Length: 197
Image (cartoon, rainbow, N blue to C red; front, side):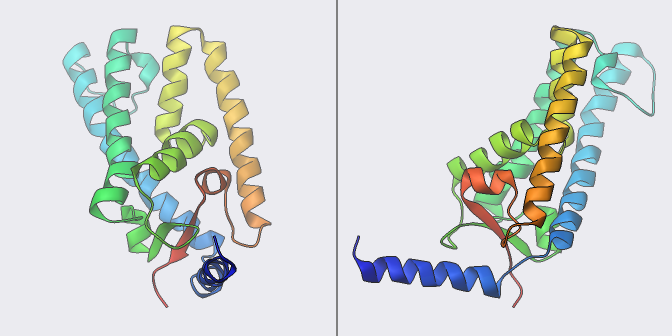
């Protein structure tokens, strides 16, 4: 690659960094909107399946209230919802945007400012957010509950502690780096920018 092309990419990256910088509080509010939407979307199949199995209606239903085959079914449905909401839609429907990000004028982009493809969003959300920073979305908690049912309840508690600690470290890291990037941003080589000038 010649020096002129490299220089152009560096300049574009600096322009994106400065012009479209996003505050941590704005990212937090977008996350909270997405979190609430996902919890509501998960509640529909969870409550429906629970009421069919038990013939009861409960307000608070957790995955450990199901026997393993049903817990696996509920987890799979919630995972598909997460997959659509966090990966498919931001790649194919609204590039780089969840509902929370759209509401606050934010967007996920690659380091060069281009829209992330499916592979990048899978790395960012599936591996970075759901697996690594496991305290960020409810689907991670369902995964721990499922593993707790499969292995034992201590496994669930240990996983919750470990991934909550990783999430806290990632948040602290984001507060003290120049582009407010969390671990999932670094892993996928993405950043969140403002779409408003």
